[in-house]
Image 1 (tube, one colour):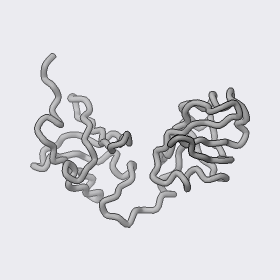
Image 2 (cartoon, one colour):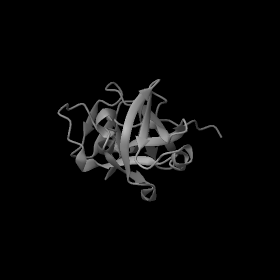
Image 3 (cartoon, rainbow, N blue to C red):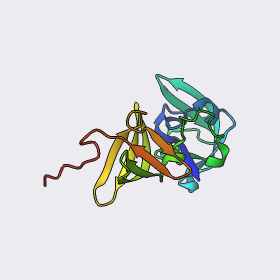
Image 4 (spheres, helix red, strand yellow):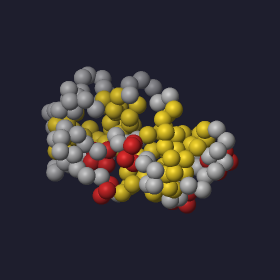
Length: 172
């Protein structure tokens, strides 16, 4: 399974640097100079990191062979991916990788089925995107108080949601 570790954004300057939306907890390792990264779409890569630096909390990458703004612009929107087998498991029992959570069945604390984890968003607060059959998506903050139990062996994630969090507005 491939894991997204970053998404190439707009060019920075005229020498081919690109901004990167970081989607990994270890950007210094994932984007170290000399690192080769697969891409999605695959036709855009693989790419090799030539240099990495931070500028105002934004990661800037220089990529081998990307020497001007046009070449950098051509990569905009490209996902940078690694193989999940390359990620060592965490020793912290309360720490999970996105790929471990995506696809888990979601049930309430009472055992009622809710749906499935479709994605994990990292926007200040980690959010689980829960796809509910015929009811759309719900966003659940990924905090212990709301997600008290995760059983990877059974493929189940328990959500103890306050009223309204998993309900859709019935008004049409």
